[in-house]
Amino acid sequence: MELATERVVVTMTKVELADFARALVQEVLGRLDAAERLHSDEPQIATGTLSVNLPGHEVAVEGITIKLKTREFALLAALAQNLGRVLTREQLLEAAWPDPQAVDDARTVDVYVRRVRVALGTAASLIETVHGVGYKLVKAAVSPAAALKTFAGLGGDPGPATSRYMSVTSGPYHRAPL
Image (cartoon, rainbow, N blue to C red; front, side):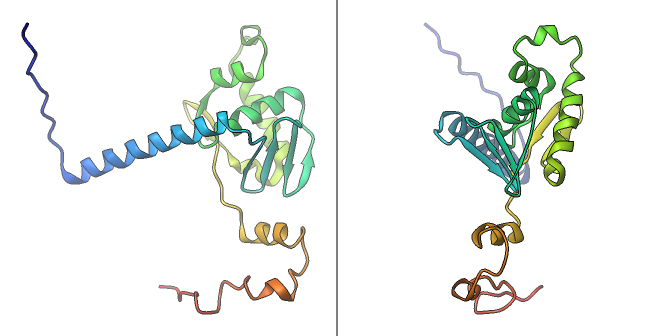
């Protein structure tokens, strides 16, 4: 029995190798995040000011409940369960429609995405169009104002006990702009 000893030699610069390794690590981490979300017991998915409660079929933007129709919620839920990943129109059809073959045009998804964006209002920008591919729900950090509202009980002064921790422009940990 003879073993194959051929190999392929690929030449690349250190920068190209670093970029390749970085892209590979990001892909693996993205897949791990998606797998963790699919298998987690976490019924609530949040990004930025948007919160999706899967078992309760509820959507909230900045703490205000938004009413969505069944297909609109299913479409948003599919995007939320795959946070940060691009879903094709066909994948969204399969996720949101019980019989995707009954839908005669993949552009139906575009219409429903537009409806969801209108319903989300200020959080509409969290749904990104990836031209030629599909859509994704982006991971967004909570704005400092939204975090303060949540921390302080949806608005108002956080009170004297917490105000000393809220300053970002002064104190020992403040860095001057470069």
